Amino acid sequence: MKIVTVVGARPQFVKAATVSRVIRSTEGLTEILVHTGQHYDANMSQVFFTQMQIPQPNYHLGIGGSSHGAMTGRMLEKIEEVIIKEKPDVLLVYGDTNSTLAGALAGVKVHIPVAHVEAGLRSFNMNMPEEVNRVLTDQISKWLLCPTETAVKNLQNEGIVARTQALISNVGDVMYDAALFYSEIAKPTDAISSLIQQLSGNFYLATVHRAENTDDSVHFSNIMDALNTISETTAVVLPLHPRTRKLLRIDYCSQVRLIEPVGYFDMITLLSNCKGVFTDSGGLQKESFFFKKPCVTLRNETEWYELIAGGYNILAGNQVDKILAAETFIQKTIINEVPPLYGEGNAAEKIVEVINKMM
Ligand code: UD1
Image: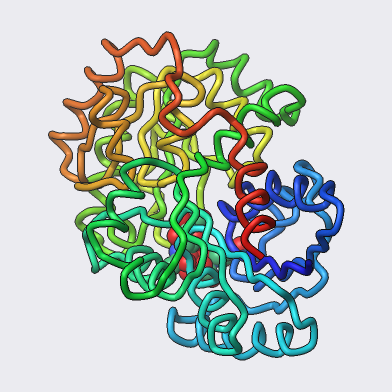
């Protein structure tokens, strides 16, 4: 069986790393990896391939840095060419990015069944480009591979199966597989090791990149002002996504420790050593939990509802007062164990089993 996997953005490299390893060690399966080029800076892309030992892509489409429509349209055209040439049995996509939607659409248009990893997640906010991408991808996928029970219920509520005969499975979360596997072997760079040493573990880790926060100058300056105030007493380390870097004015960041985007090994080392996390990233909310760190989400809703229900995460939106008040949540929350909200660390095996069985 031949599988064409489409990736393009940073979180997809982390997810594909674990599944690719299982695909490539399963007899009878071949994987062709397509990188759309959505993320192209070395520290947003190549570092993940190197550290996580993801095979180099068979196709690199070099499409990044344009508007949503132009990017998605160009990806659709190029991925279709690859599919027509490779004639795969399955097209595999991850998550909710423009690369996900373009891959799924290219596959279904030429009648290649699509498997969607991270199916069923919903924020119920259609202003987010990611919500549009995931809702549409679920509509056209044959295998809906959900990370949680909440995701399964969302799909059931939408009645997708009755209309499309898709197959829904709760396989667990591949990011949990990645956290378990790579935390055994992760070696941080010297720069991150000395930063952690210098701060003696007394710091928060923060990330900001969502369009809803960075494209609105009031939201963005609220978040930066709040982080700045917090860092007067506890250091805040903020690896900068290129979207954020483009917007940052120097007066936002007199106290916050701004660093370049970090690779996966540095990220999990920062997570293991920090006191808590402030983020608008979907993946980092879960990774905080995997590393037993309380998380403040800089959004008004989340797809990872079970983290809120379990008391591991709170929503603080993008108002200064709410973010400042949320620091108390980090200070008083202690996470001693990681219950299996996201499976048992074998999501990749389950995904490959489901696809293999149904062919
Ligand atoms: C994308 C995904 C989001 C995911 C995030 C993870 C969509 C709609 N959004 O958002 O779901 O959580 O990736 O990181 O697909 N840029 C660079 N260098 C790079 C990559 C991007 O300079 O290596 C620039 C782009 O040119 C653009 C901006 O950063 O100006 C944002 O990149 P884009 O790919 O639009 O989306 P993300 O914000 O990264």
